Image 1 (cartoon, rainbow, N blue to C red):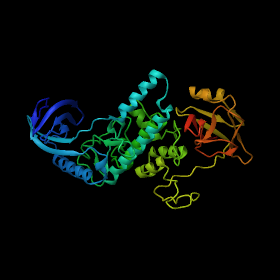
Image 2 (cartoon, helix red, strand yellow):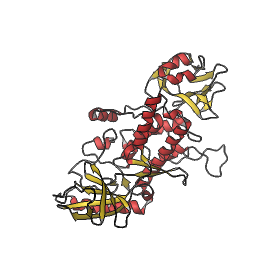
Image 3 (cartoon, helix red, strand yellow):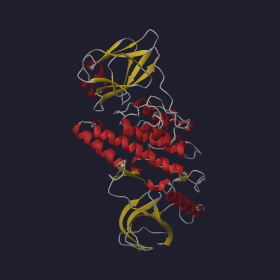
Image 4 (spheres, one colour):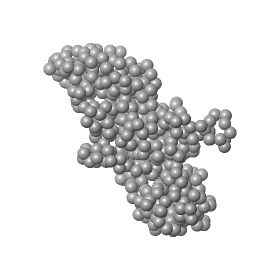
Length: 436
């Protein structure tokens, strides 16, 4: 039986410098390679060489590594630098990867922000700079996942802890992304050797419907589902399905309980909050065929899904391809409407209602940015809902980030807030929905 390495041990030219600890499938270490290069080193507990699918697993790993190194994924995925079998108390399989450091994984970043919120009572995303950073990370994440998919790879265990961010001012995005923990990722066009012998790797609160279904196989759309959960956390400030009970999490996922999120900040033009909210909600569909692709999501986050085509007149909308089109917002014609906050609380309206500070306090402390008489919402004679200003206010009434200066018809998914259009500041964003 193979034994555990310890600091100072040397195997195949690699000197172990630190033991990180055992995981479900492997023990991880920091090591120094034969050339002095620092590497992330893995010693596999499963599969053991005696397992029937062990040899197929080793071959599968070679192909996975080759696809990462030869495609777009090389820019975003942690790269394997070596793999070998060796005796260490018994025969064992080892892999060495490039060591990523000088950054933090997304889980660490979000935990630090939540701790700051707990101490100060001030939501980090209320700072426009933090919100802008979250939007950047969302775009970088989707670029990385899109690169994996273009290389024929399904990560299959995405979660904030597996997205490592390295600040890099030399590139436009400002951050390098390294997707880590990919040793049980999948080749999109080849069945995994462990299929039928053990389940697919995943993490509580981040498993897709395909992970949760008996006989289900994760596919690129499964990564999109998990990206949707991560983007809800980044852009809406909450995980829509979090539960300490895995069974309750599975029930919520399969029931599609999530609602289109109210984003905690305003997307910069040409992107729009309503488009982003709709796309994020589609990510969580139990039906993988209805989820957007990584490229579609990236386009929506950047506003490229509705940007003018190159060289076209500014007034001409860009032709949308079927792959990148996002369903248009529907005019809001209904008996009633609902204003939904980021935490799921909602206000139902069926008659002419003056919106102001007193009514908004049910949504939280940012109601103090509203005037006592901010704006009026009412239903027109044709059944379509209208929002109108009531006069000078301390902060502007914003609809999808634009200041409301005159009465306007409302659409399904519009986001109403108060703030300053010129500064990109929006407080207490509420998403508008039809209600019976």
